Image (cartoon, rainbow, N blue to C red; front, side, top):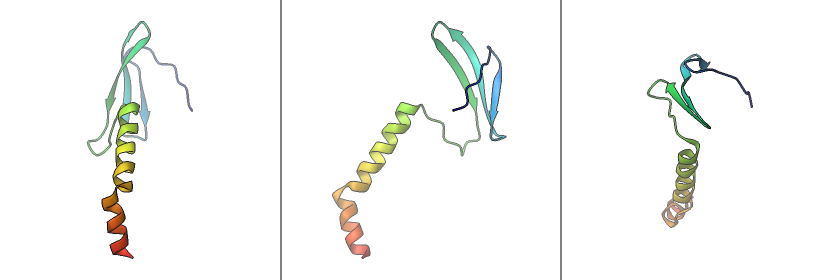
Length: 72
């Protein structure tokens, strides 16, 4: 993991097209702004993990097993 120090209104650039800016620092919370192309999905980690879990459950559903059997 890369750890960087930034002050309010300072930013970092990721992969030439994603900019992360520190908008506000209040106590132990930091508000960040993310500028990225529309085709780049941006999620809070807990939401991303829920999406991944739901996708895995959908793959493991009985309907998928029936589809797999048809494909054999």
